[in-house]
Length: 282
Image (cartoon, rainbow, N blue to C red; front, side, top):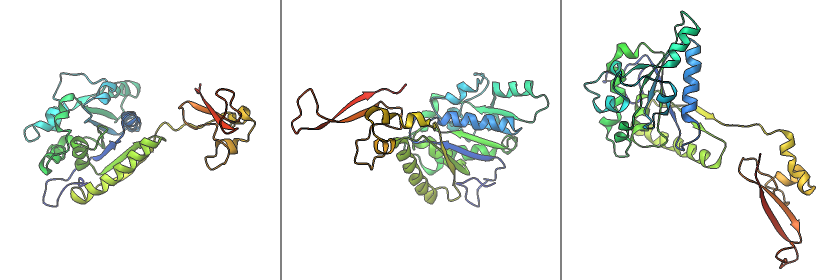
């Protein structure tokens, strides 16, 4: 398949399906989702390559890659015209465990290890040539790339150079979000940035989807818990459109118990007021 940023005259035909896992906001479980997808593909018998472009290299740590056996992602990008993909690929401990658990499996999970050195490319002023560094590496070493069914790129939580390098080399972008205000707003900004990037650099880039991570189903007892606080109905307490004060929150932030009535301390100035106290969720 043709990578997203390739022009018809470039050597850009790649058989591996390349997906970037992206989130503008940190702490939403982006690396965890990457590892979960890699694990599922491995158990399905697929050949998976994880490219760790996050300078924190958490995916590399989680996959228990043995260091010192090759170059890391930062040096691979730095010397993209001289280094080959095969010089950076390292086997993960997960792959070894899968082979011992399922003898004869065709699945494998290899890693291009991350490092803090890749941070030299995580800046907003990269030119078109720099954005194509990873794309050139994947397409030039065709033999190594063809050994995998899917490549998952773990991007840093930003829209700077490393994320855009990953997007240029990818056919799809998978966004990770959690049900929280700042994360949803960050996802919306990422989609707008993808639209601009697609128009200028990668017309074939598509959105592979949005993963809603850390979604919890609240039990009915917790949803109606505010009714026991003030004797009001769950709908009137929890519905933000209700005229009654909202007594419970659906997040794990400190829940707020609100009562309407005379305030003993200090004395009310207007007869009635609203008294709120934080109640930490357990």
